[in-house]
Image 1 (cartoon, rainbow, N blue to C red):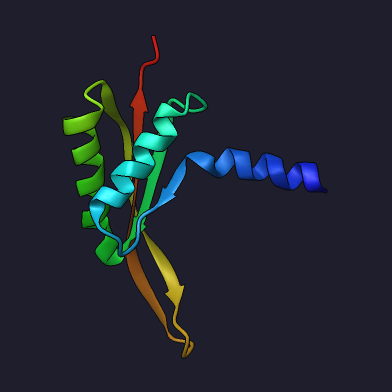
Image 2 (spheres, rainbow, N blue to C red; image 1 turned 135 degrees about the horizontal axis):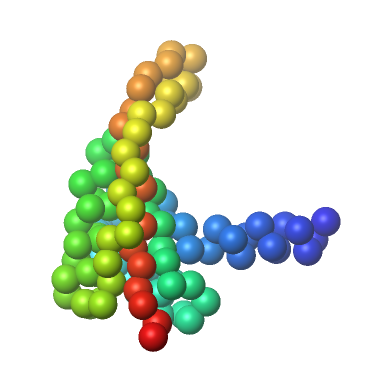
Length: 103
C-alpha cells in the first residue's frame, strides 16, 4: 500500500493548486517543478477569486523566467461546491497547463 501511495504522489507532483498567496509564490513553485528535470509540464489549478492569480503566475513565469515555456492547454469550467452550512453553489474553475521543450 505504501508504494501505491508514493506512486500517486509522484503523479500529482506537477500539479499546483493556486490559492490566496501572492503570484510570485506560485511562480517559484512552477520554476521548481519545471527545473527539477522530472516533468516537462506543470498544471495550475484554481477556483473562484484565485483564477486571476493563476493567470498572473503563469504569465509571469512564461514571460520573465521561462521564455521557452508555452501554454499547452487552458480548461475552464464550473464546480459545484457545498459550503459548511450545507448550501450548494457554483464556482468557476481553471486549469492551465504550461509546458517546456527539453530538447
